[in-house]
Amino acid sequence: MFDKLENQKKRFMALETELSKSEVVQNQELFRDLNKEYSSLTEVVGKYDEHSENKRQIEDLVAMAGDDDAEIAAMAKEEMAGLREANTVLEEELKLLLLPKDPNDDKNVVLEIRAGTGGEEAALFGYNLLRMYTRYAEREKFGVERLSSNITELGGVKEITLLISGKGAFSRLKYESGVHRVQRVPETESSGRIHTSAATVAVLPEAEDVDIEIGPNDLRIDVYRSSGNGGQSVNTTDSAVRITHEPSGLVVTCQDEKSQHKNKDKAMKVLKARLYDIAKQEQDAKQSQNRKSQVGSGDRSERIRTYNFPQGRVTDHRISMTLYKLEQFLDGEMNEMIDGLILEEKTKALSAQE
Image 1: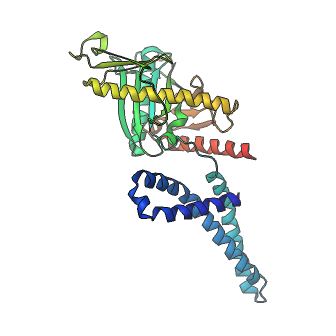
Image 2: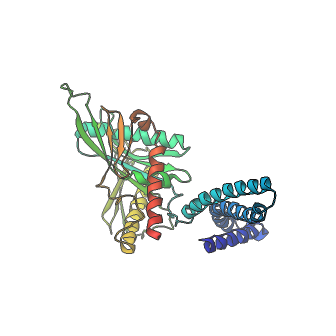
Image 3: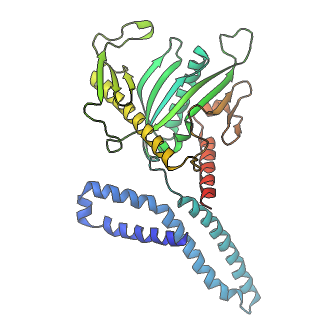
């Protein structure tokens, strides 16, 4: 571990030198890439320096601990014990920092919510999830943009796609992919019987042009007149866009904007994210059948969480965590659960390396 840390410190110092050169500063693309790498090493190098300084102080205290003056010796031993304890904690933190990072962690997120079993109640739960993720994004200072939506007459969400942007957005939200189940008494239920319904969430990293290649003849783009609930016309121009990716058969539609150009741009964002996700899943499958470093299988058919309204609880089944603060959770206070999922992922990754 310490050889790896020493190499990272050498790289950190080399980057520091490179970033001070005028020719690098003038090359914006190179400066941005080097500065990004420099920033990613700052925390691990800082903790390694702290560990090294503690170690140096411990070596100095060894002689003092054998001093003839009992008081000096006792003080030295007490200080040594504290430094050794601090270094034990630092070593555990350094192990986590040295774990391979998901290259998508700093990317923006394309988040899709789809109502599942349960009819209108599932769509209303879809709205709850939409609000939850929007409130969470606001708390984390992430931007939220609606890419496409299909809203029911009662305000439920049949299907909606969001772009959530901000550094680390994917690293925090990637654990949300899967089936979310709700247990509650619907407002339309006169007998007070608890119903169970579900919604599916997919979290995809936003694909950049360098991530995915789309050939000039791969797309079929159709335009048509957008419509609202019940087929009522909401636009008198052909502004809605349907993009079909011929090689894969993927189809993306967008009609939220009045501008055909804006709808096309949004549809392309979703299409690229889905294509990138497919390519990534195929690559992951080739690399490992087990994918030990992942929390759960990541399969979107997997039930990951239950929201129980009568008991006011939310349970994540992957890490067996239950929080009895459902209202706050649905208001975007999700970090306790997300931190638990991140810790579980890192713990499994550490075990896989041993």
